[in-house]
Length: 414
Picture 1: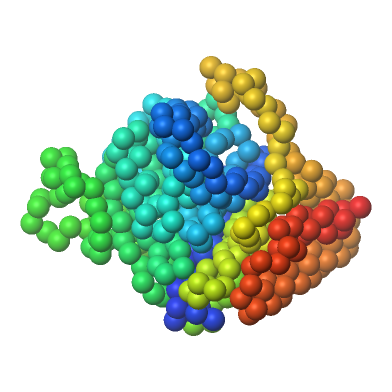
Picture 2: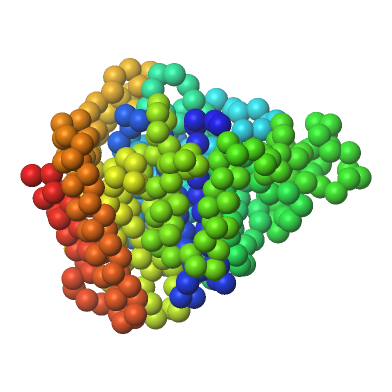
């Protein structure tokens, strides 16, 4: 079992309850890395403006969409997030035969945010990502550490109608469309022979490398991987364990079910250790356009002992409690070269309270706190279901839905 892991899930009708798509992701990162939840409104830009991503500068577009992100606090991009149109994206680290270039380029996490800011559909976000991949490439250190750690990326993208899996090997890529049922991705190439979009030179490149003879049916995972984990039946394989959990609830999948899957420790989906689940996300994407999409984020490690807090896009979102670290500006060690010589304290207040409670409370107190937190989570799920049933997202109370939940959670630690 590779500790450097994440897991992303999607369930579409008829696997779900209520004619909706359910998206979920665990972000497994270094155990001391802080993940924050941030909202950025859409903006218009002047021609020729530039955008500074984590490592490189790229061309800005004329207009960006509003996004809510769960991101490691030291970088520009995000592990997962959603935009105002109900597009959700999560990424995974993948390795294969294609060598990883250690030069600084766009991180997979930058590509997640860029896809959300620039596209109104899942397929549109896929096109944005592969276009940027072709123009700027992917690469750079993926940890806030002097120790280099880099990888290629796979993505799971979903909207109200469908989902897509995009898997990359350097500049080459393949994409698979998902119209129904269940699907998950982990830290392996999983697209086999069902390829709906692909890099135009992907097959020819594989032939020049001697990975494919041009006669056998083309299998992306088999050709570009050292092995094909999607065929593995090992009980220790997270990809297989994640699919088993989805299949167990197929036909009855809800947001709460997805939260339980993300919280599952025996399967390894809820990660513990040097790398652990530092942030989690679950989204409800109703196929009825009159119902708002709702996105739940933890902002704290370990979904089993965190509250999934709801966020809904509304026409005018008031400023809400930003569970984010202070801004370090140009003095941030991430921006100074050589990079990562020092590491500032990026913990936000909710993270600190969460962390302190785990250290200082007795077992009985922890159990009581956990009970309160999960009761709050249940109450918020019920509130969201009421909103979905009503079909209205114009209520002024929705503008503070996430912030109010953060406040209620913070009160438990007093």
